[in-house]
Length: 103
Image 1 (spheres, rainbow, N blue to C red):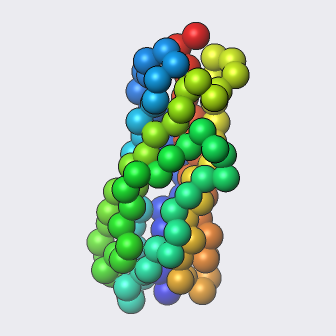
Image 2 (tube, rainbow, N blue to C red):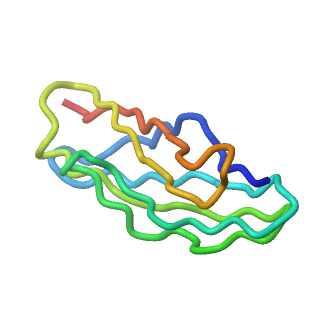
């Protein structure tokens, strides 16, 4: 039916100890509306600020969020953002968010 985009996202340079912003695109390649029930990360350092609720067939939207760098140990990080949809073929899509802390 419909699919959410999979892949990884690399944010730009982040301020030391601040929040690194990220954004990525999701797209509905199916023939019916795609409903995003939940967009989140299991990591406490990750906050999803904006995500579309519904994508029409052939259309896309943007997910935006941030990472609390004070909660990251070391010079690099990698987190997973999960997208829960009503797609019966792929109900969960995962996007990796990778970056450097500037330390």
